[in-house]
Amino acid sequence: MAGNTVTRAQLSEAVYQEVGLSRNESADLVESVLGHIVESLSKGDSVKISSFGSFHVRSKGGRIGRNPKTGEEVPIQPRKVLIFRASHVLKERINAALTSIRAVKPQS
Amino acid sequence: MIKSELIARLAEKNPHLYQRDIERIVGCIFDEITAALARGDRVELRGFGAFSVKERPARTGRNPRTGDAVSVAQKFVPFFKTGKELRESLNGGAHPDDDHEDEHEA
Image (cartoon, rainbow over the protein chains, first blue to last red):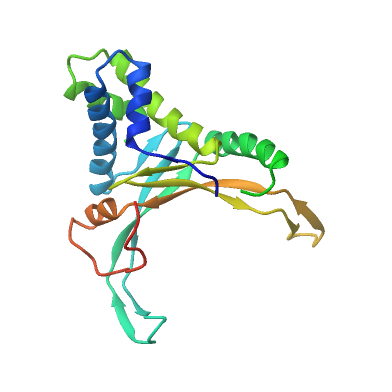
């Protein structure tokens, strides 16, 4: 849905506006926030950010998959996947904002 | 790890910053992501993943106990797709040959 994409650049800009740090340092801090999250998750730990959501690592067992195009059987190795569960606060904010916008302009 | 632990770790690595400022920075990052999603925008953080909002159209549901039809309003749900690098580091950095679904993603 909808148009714009927010990237690291906008997050750094927001940090830059918020605190009196240089643009470079703001960018570094955004990077280290993500880095610490990745590090925790890589160790298998969950990450919970209150009023935003939580990230959990789930182990999936191996299974025999099938290439849907060729029908060929392919073994799928056991692996870990990341699950993001949005907090109620985040869900409510999104619904409150988008439900009213979409009511005015129906399709995006 | 919870938000306060994240802040503590950042504070340890950045002794020149006030803890109060680190709290604001962390809050600001997640607020910015929230605000983007609330506008219906997508947040793409390469190597980490992408947040987006998916629309669930209005539908007629049923009360499983009574079988009564109930109308369920349209709603929007936040969605996160793990980025390639993060997915690989969850699996020990190796490249598990599990999926070939997307060559172009966050």
